[in-house]
Image (tube, rainbow, N blue to C red; front, side):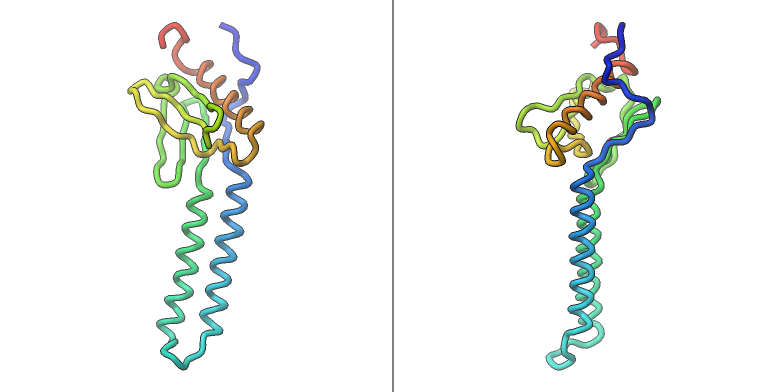
Length: 154
């Protein structure tokens, strides 16, 4: 079997660079803005220390939420693929991957697994450039074909 030209060296990590940058910047703006607001609030009207800390803590929560939105990534290694989505991390052995695809209109890549489930791969997103997403999907597909089960066994 010939190895596709899109196969890359391992380990390889893909992540949504633009989304990660935007969410980090927005989270920082939220945190700084709410901390400045907490300092500037007048003491009259019930804005004591506890209330100010509550406003600042809301900024911390906002930063955490934004960083979580920028969390998705995909790490391919010889032992398999680790897919990190917003709340869940899934490790797949290469043999568990039946198909890697990105259809027109899909926001990110999907993996069909041998157990019949489909796993979204949010670390490879079309919002960060369609050509980059297509290239990354081809690379991941090539690795799945190289390290996974033989095509006739699927």
